[in-house]
Length: 160
Image (cartoon, rainbow, N blue to C red; front, side, top):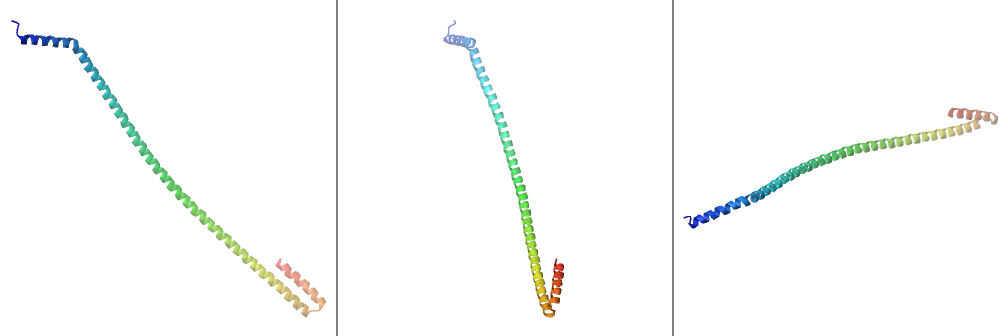
């Protein structure tokens, strides 16, 4: 007989499995395929995001290196500029000291020349006065006036 219960159960199970395979296998496979495709897209997107993050990291590191290099150049330029300014200030100071020294020496020379001229003028005045006194004592009035006038003219001519 066809009749054992296990046979009917097996036959019912095969029919149910056949119906599931016939009607439900396509949607299950389509759902699994869609889920697999969605996972694949998410993985590709994650990979693209990772690559972009690596590019941004590399760009950031490059910018940091460039900034460090630029700051080193700025510091080096500032050092050179400060050295140049120091040398310029030293040179200006030396020139100023030299100008002041020269000015002081010029003032000293002028003071010496003025003092020498004053001494000469006083010596001339004293000599003229002494000569006038001697002549006045040793000459008569007429002759004394002539000699005095002639002597004063000679002395004045020699001074000028």
